[in-house]
Image (cartoon, rainbow, N blue to C red):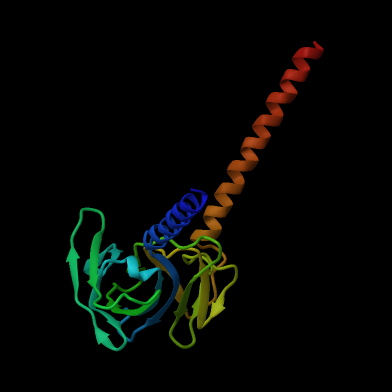
Length: 226
């Protein structure tokens, strides 16, 4: 009887582990994104994406994209072969369903490439975002921006830069952003820019709040003393 119970518990445990393994959701393991400014003031973006637990993708990789009208020549490739995709337009963002034939491996790596068209003086660059969470333990998203030769990348960019960089910069993020906004020019970051102005306004507002609080407390003390 004991042996029967033990065998039953062992079988149940193994079955539970098997179900748990099969039910693991896909995760964004790593994303290496390179953005290069092209000669026509546009951008070329290449994303090297690695999805872990890819056997649970069911043959489709889901992505989101904002401002799809700015994007052209979009391609998805894996192992040097082109992947088919379907664009589903939405009110706020579009969704891209990419078909993959072989998802038998634990980690699936593929490459996304596309051009971004922008007007002169416009720096916003939409990013194709794999719709899978990261483990959240470390910054697995690396965004590398390459400006034209002789140009500086300004601090009031997005992601925000701690200091002005010349030519190239890399940011390490936890998630893939829907867009980036690397502002660059032939001169270093000017003293008065959107970042410094906003910081100044916030500082003035905080000082105003502290002064008002101090005056209110001082008034209470004077009323109590009277």
